[in-house]
Image 1 (cartoon, helix red, strand yellow):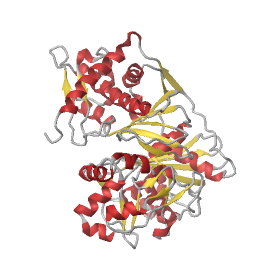
Image 2 (cartoon, helix red, strand yellow; image 1 turned 90 degrees about the horizontal axis):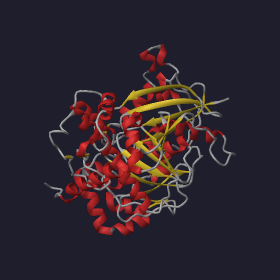
Image 3 (spheres, rainbow, N blue to C red; image 1 turned 180 degrees about the horizontal axis):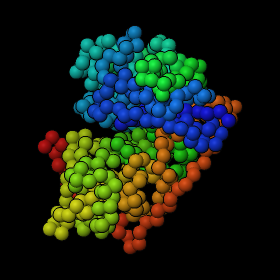
Image 4 (cartoon, helix red, strand yellow; image 1 turned 135 degrees about the vertical axis):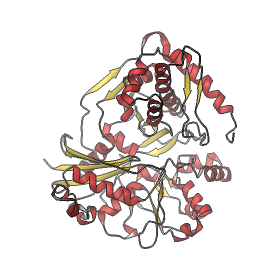
Amino acid sequence: MPLVAGIDSSTQSCKVVVRDAASGDLVRSGRAAHPDGTEVDPEAWWRALGEAVAQAGGLDDVAAVSVAGQQHGMVALDEAGQVVRPALLWNDTRSAPQAERLVEERGAAWWATTTGSVPVASYTVTKLAWLREHEPQHADRTSAVALPHDWLTWRLRGTGRLADLTTDRSDASGTGYWHPAAGRYLPDLVREVLGRDVGLPRVLGPADSPGTTRGRRLDAGAAARGPAARGAGADGIPLGPGAGDNAAAALGLGAGPGDVVLSVGTSGVVSAVTDRGTADVSGLVSGFADATGRFLPLACTLNGARVLDATARLLGTDVSGLDTLAAQAPVGAGGLVLVPYLEGERTPNLPLATGSLHGLTLGTTTPAHLARAAVESIACLLADAVDALAAEGVLARRFLLVGGAARSLTLRQALADVLGTPVLVPTPDEYVANGAARQAAWVLATSQAPPPDWPLHETVLVEPGPGGDGARVRERYAEARTHVLERPQDS
């Protein structure tokens, strides 16, 4: 059977999986790191892609390939297709004042109704406003604006023509200037925000191909790196439309209506596949599109696994050691509560907030109690996001937990406890890259209405513990969070 490749260009790294198009079985894979920071030269993504593809054994035998990527980032291109400035990533919050001003000017109801979402600093539209205000010379040079997956797909095509930029519904719906219900851009809004007309990627259907690869452009440094790197690219491979990372993960999991995906990576994300879009005036739920023609209401937290990383460093251990420590403390950490707004927060929208620790006593000043409080803080943060989806009428049939932090046994249990319902944990895998690969297989079988059926393999079902301890954990967390909500943001 033919092979397909899926690429996940995330905040922290680039992952490539090569899978059997019919069964979804993994054949080989590769990975390369991205530089740290909230702004990145896109060429770093390109180099990492070449390295990851080479590590995965190249694409010479692959029948189709698709790219999924981190959402919202701003890649500004000049008329020659050159990057104007380093790309601002989704987790760059410098455009928070512009987001606030945009909402004030038009009102939250207009944004929610027209774009499905109320802008926060993550969204591309706010970054365009920041660019015009703070770097007008770069705004004046900008002829086209793309998202990370758009730019990588365009580079894989290798034409260099701005007119060949493409995207998909899921990523377009996260820009803040695309109408999910109507399926169209809002060019007048872009002109108003940036101060000029620019080219925007053409939005493709779920199984549409933008064209084929030009492999010699993918890995120009392969020859210099030796035989192991050769064959990393290939000409003439059909490309998929690509997707935003959350939509790709849902596709990789085979999520359908009623499924709620809890993903804990750099950020925490709660998303659900639905047949209708949402329009949350509060701004907590983003009304995104998914990768299959449906919708993907989503609540995202800025804080996720990095809270666990930071706590582990503080305690002189790693994430696995943190998990071991957390298991040694009682549920509820003896009343110790961490509000984990270490990088500001998006759900709730508090970009300038900081973290805080509550309930310190002589009995809770132990590594185990702090480890447990850190784990439970992430569970409560995700539970708040689940509540936000429920308030928009999103019904949950089952919960699936994925992401790097899903390996934590204490986090799995804490989530089941605070949600008060079983949580299904699929085998840890690269579900964003898998979704891109599944999309590539769909492109190969365009006569097939739904994407190919790739079943989940091993899963673990985690039941909530007895006694209602999770409810008490949430109550204490809500009380501690209230203190943060009442604190002035400029303090």
